[in-house]
Image (cartoon, rainbow, N blue to C red; front, side):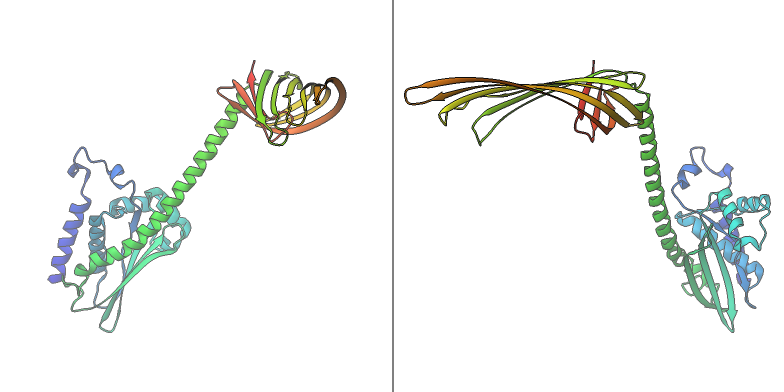
Length: 359
């Protein structure tokens, strides 16, 4: 009679806990409520005990599922939903050890873990063992075991199954939640990697959609002082590149280098160097990689005016020199378009490195 009362009570509680769609409020969103909870499939506990019947093992399963669902630490798959899925997949009672079948079941139900229990008896000692497994690999995630006797197994105090269920579930939940948190972090990391890769692809596609054909200009100016000869220096330059649709390119570079005079050592010298370079070559663009091959003709001219001062004399000398040179070169640059292709940046190279603005 005592067993019957417990059975009826927990069957009623299970029905009330899981409920039906009509019992839920219209504002209740079950998907949102369980979105962050790991899905768990609990299948009927097996029994190998002379003092516990198969029906009583089902009652223990229902008691366990009811208490587990009430904790709201996992999403317990409803028994009716589980049975429909098993029928649809032709999932038999012997398939719980078949990883291919359990994986299909988990994907159908949105579940990540399996819970099963066994009730065994040796003499007067009855053992309840509950194991949590990964639904795909069947690897053990967590487990718990309790000992009873035929006299106390149904007690409501801490000596029986009803009284010990909360602590059993708490213990199992620790293992599930730890594993679930680890998986969630791994999923987040994977999503972050995929998002970064997606953004990278989009940026590469966006960069590839910009045309390099046209004229681009870079200007540069720099001033500094030397503590060695006490001179002030100025360097100014302007570079232009022209890319054509047939894979050819041309360019010019004009730079001026100035130094002021110095009278601290008995002479004054002012200098100016002008360098003009003309480039002609070809280019190959592959994504953000730009390969350049070119020849260059360079003319360099420099002027220097020197004034020597003595005790009674002052002499002025003017010097003008020039040189011409030619050479060839090549290099691979990383190409980036900025501000909606209003300028380009060439990186990892010396001759043409820097920011060039669209003309």
